[in-house]
Amino acid sequence: MKGTNKLWWGLVLLVILSPIGLILPEIFKSGPAWGEWSLEEIEKMVGYVPAGLKKLADLWSAPVPDYNLKNWEGQGLTKSSLGYILSGVLGVGIIVLVTFILGKIISKKDGQ
Amino acid sequence: MHIPDGYLGPQTYGVLYGIMVPLWALASKLVRRTLRQRQVPFLALGAAFSFVVMMFNVPIPGGSTGHAVGGVIVAILLGPWAALIAISIALVIQALLFGDGGITAIAANCFNMAFVMPMVGYWVYRLIGQGAPATSRRKWIAGAVAGYVGLNVAALTTAVMFGIQPFLARGPDGRPLYFPYPLEVAVPVMAAQHLLLFGFIEAVLTAFLVIYFQRSDPSMLEPIRRIQ
Image 1 (spheres, rainbow over the protein chains, first blue to last red):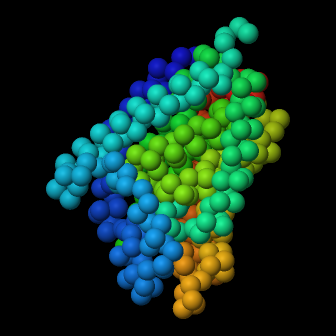
Image 2: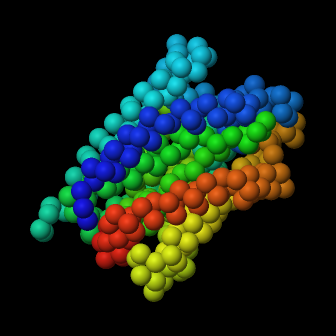
Image 3: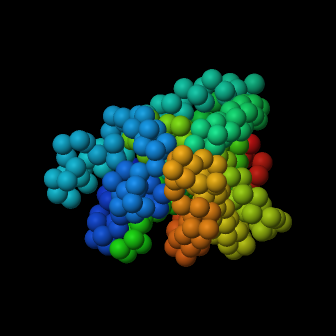
């Protein structure tokens, strides 16, 4: 098992390229994933908002909704792409931190 | 494939927490047996990789979007139980920080993408690749098929969770309380999207990375080096 350096660089490259996942759906005028609609979209589709769904929908307000900064969304693709990359950096950072802490707890010491 | 809050009723998401809590505990126990501290970076890489892969939304022109998960290649490299932990971490952060997938649906989403997908993909890969050397063509073909099948089975279990909602809970007016479309709609739509498009993206991603490791470090593809 060689070092992980190259793989980390690959990850950095993927984060930099991630706005492709934002821009392509824009170009092809695609909506959200099937089964991930907003309340307004559901109402448009079936004519009403299911009562239970409405009650649970806003249970949690995420600090960084939709992988973008609140003021940067809808301000052109450059800004939203930058916000997307920053969200990717933030997400990767926290995930790596959490995994390292969890990993240290559940792993054995080397040579044990 | 990230089920939001409100799409599943308490009966469904409750049962899924009941299934996932023992599975998380079992995965920690199994991974603990074999995970060495110097392997922790691989676990972190797997979790972060899956998170970033899911940012690449792929459009169906004029329709909806979808994405690969990376769950099968993580399972091939780290084993399905380590993959369960890695992808669960990615899904929990997506829900808490970015509102991608609901809080009530964390267990449901982990069941589909962190358990079903890596487990199915891993065994398809093992089955097809059995006996073939790590650098053989059969191994990356096995990776492609495993990626395709893994994502599609996860899409199916997601669609079933959606589709049973109108049968489980209706209001006094007879309208569904949660996800409004029945199985006859949810399963064919989800299946078509993943069979025709997204499954192939997961297949290419998985095969590409198997080939990458065949060339750079084939030992990563040997079962003996796996975390679990």
